[in-house]
Image: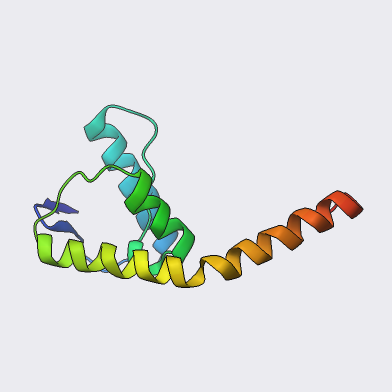
Length: 103
């Protein structure tokens, strides 16, 4: 693995994405001297997770402000468009759990 200013690049292709993520978590934990490194592939993330990342997460590095702003803008708009659907879904999920005690 090579850590470059605009991302993390692999020297060889990984067939097992799980092994890649574990390897990255280990490398980042070692560099940051912490055991709490979480690695996610953002272009495969679900909307709720991506919204949480850009609203609650800390930006460590941005090498292309235009792309970052466009990405964040897209996630904000998509989240606000989809939020009523999620709110309805969670309302009925909580209601069912209260009524039946199960998911």
